[in-house]
Image (cartoon, rainbow, N blue to C red; front, side, top):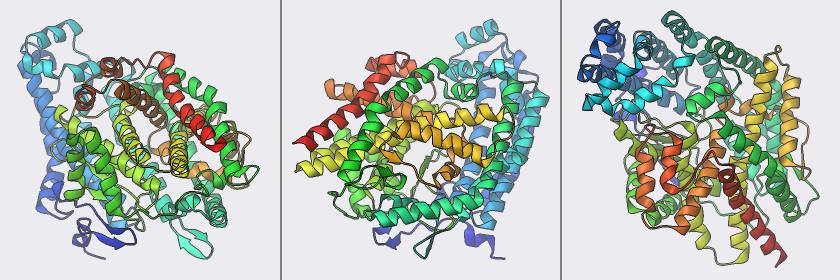
Length: 609
């Protein structure tokens, strides 16, 4: 077997590609290697430290209420342990994302998850016991202690979970069985997906470059890629059906034990957003399908010279689009310049990601598909994963993930317990970063064709972010609701997938054979049920935010940075209030959607000219 030291860290040097040197991240700021003394010490101390914390505080929190400073010390100790565990699992998770097909990394990641589950069972009592404290006595302790009052947002947030918590023994059972239940099926999905191969015109490809071909100028290559995807997905659909059925049932069991009624209620709680707010957003987007996606795809079919788009033409570039490959250096400067145009501080934070080895950009066998920004822990810094292939959308993805990174850096000052932002607001900075980059590039266009190409690309991104993600949400709802009546076959899942896709795409898109299996590769369905509506939430929110910025730019940057710095310490209503925005108002969603409609209006005007 290859020695573990060979796998200790991603190489921090750049890899030469057709897009120029692409950076690979350096994880040494977390740990210098899997076999390093630093990692071994932290790994071996995880369980004993948690046990010591349990021995020190379990059953004693009521007594600590007599002095709020004493309770604050206990919470600070808890936060410290959470940060240490977070550092370990972040390191293991990022190594695994770098190559989930590598058995050494897979075992390492599995061992870390098991060890941290053992540690977490000794910490489980803390939040449960805090939620049993008398409300009046806790408020009195907070009022009498400045140190404890600092944690008030976290304590208030914790109280929201109280109605759905079980007794400690049951909570411990759910926790310990997660490693052989949900977490195991998540890992099975990841390792299966990263190992799949797709034969396109005789070439064997991984999923990321195959999906990338759906944006190729050559329609025959788009068709070949779609057929290759359908073939491989179809060959593996039974496995993905089993994973989906198992995880949906697992969620149903958990929801029933905790007392959640609607299939998405637990996600709404985790997002700290009210169900009616989400319902209003979903309803507004559904109502806008004809005005946005149906209208745009009909227009795009005319541009491509066909009566109807094939499903593999949905993200095709326009015939007039310049087929330029964007090298990494240009992508970097494009995003940094756009960020600096908003505020130099934003560009300074983003530049650190490039300069300090915090980005992993090349496509590699076994590497996780897609892109993400991982916040790790407050005393380190985030890391960004990309699969950069030189497309304009890759530049927007870079802007998106760096937006997350900037947000995570600013929110880190809240500490391990309050830095994490609910998903509904976690997409704000990322989508705002995209918008800044888009507006900067749009201002640089010199001809009507250039402007049309830029606008069309942005409309498609926004349709993918809003319409497509709400369609995903509707699909998930149907799956989880139907699963309550028994297992679903692959054909049933495929029929549900096609029905929601047809509703959102409209008559201008022709869905061909094989597309019924394309639900299989969406990781959010597996890792974070109902996560997807957060993208639509973030896009509509940013559209409204950007309108405020355009109309009243003075002082906007300061308010914007204050919102990002708040992390998870404030409810969305409080964070949006300084901007005069209210997500509970249906007009808020219509305002956000009207931005997309206005861009389509402009495209129609350009076309008519």
